[in-house]
Image (cartoon, rainbow, N blue to C red; front, side, top):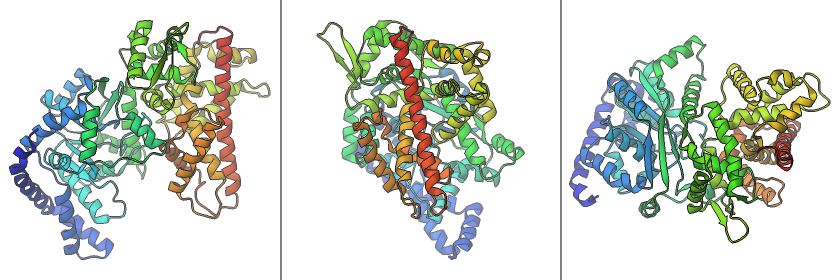
Length: 612
């Protein structure tokens, strides 16, 4: 990539960007919105318009062929050379056909800095329209920002919650792009996932698009859920360290050079899958029929994320990491790892889960290949020289292994909840075991509703029934018999609740534990409380009061705080606040004990020779 050769184009494209900004600012809609905002904030329309024009010139983009080539053929390989790309060709062809009649809004998962470059390359190679990609201005440094802003990239401030003029600028520029029927792309998670699974969505940009359609500023657009999943990623160890308390490196030219160096080593495959497109206009019409209201945008975002989850494949590294993490720090022989993986494969097959190359794990050779991949990236260690070669998660790499496991963890959550509900129903002192199991399942769904994207209650009930039939076709009849309830847990081919939910429940317990220790008459400082949770969480793990190092996670702590806020536990002053916070901590402690009980049961099954 010859940057000097692009210099003459920089000034020309800067002029083009200013021309676009003036064009947007001159529209009747933009001027009307400026006048409305000026009245609302008590400023003159001229003053607001002048500030808005500056904001527009900052964010508008053009698609220069020369800079697009620099993005695709210069920056692209620096970011993507580590992977072979596996894409759903059929779905991509269908999107190409849809794009002839509809503007598309691609809403991908965000795992890596490479995400945008991989999707851009796929669209280019298949002769599809280039997207206008919204991203954070932390990537605005030279030369990255210069190229991005001239190849269709829109770099906006990471936070502008209190800047009403800037909000107007972003909203109206997005509406203008939509009115031109141009394709868009952004990451609703707001940033790269630090845990490997979907983060809660950010609603701002989607709400702006909804506003544009509802006000007549744009026609319908199709929302395209996109899942990008990686066998392995070089940057995971850095993100895991940040989650556990390390300071995030600032993106700059030096950072870019270092990132490019790490990407030179090939480490597997990137899988790109597309969920069923969602008509935004039809989604809004359905929301109106159901009563609409302030949750309309949230429901649409939720549906997009569910469609992403439904098309996300289970990868071989995810399943092997899943098996090894379930054994804590105990090393396993190759045959033992294989024995742990096989029932997970059977479960995935029984569910018909989307997958990639999982059939290789049916053989010990295939498992060994995956272990070598994980070993090569420093996640798994191999001990040789004894009677047998054994494998375990490398010390300090549990959060990295969990990242890979979590790319598929959503497929196993309902089963984990069913196991815990069944455990609750095995108590000797209860009547109505089936009702108790249902109550337990829905309580866990409520406890984890900010962590996972559950179906509505009626659908969730049917999903639980389907899971129960996988355990035993006569599950409903057998759960009514006391001796059969425990036998169901003891004879099921694999128990997974402790492998799936323990780190999340332990993280929630840390938050609940520290929240209960806060003064009830003071406002909660979320940032300070999160840092306290990081420090105390590390202590609890070192003391083995908690079992999973990956439970120390700022991202999961944030979700736990969202749950606490939802339950009214963050607002000071209520007379019963201290009691309700203690009850919250007790509820999480009980949940942690329940998954520990499943783990003990799993250990007992293995000692009795039951298939793991």
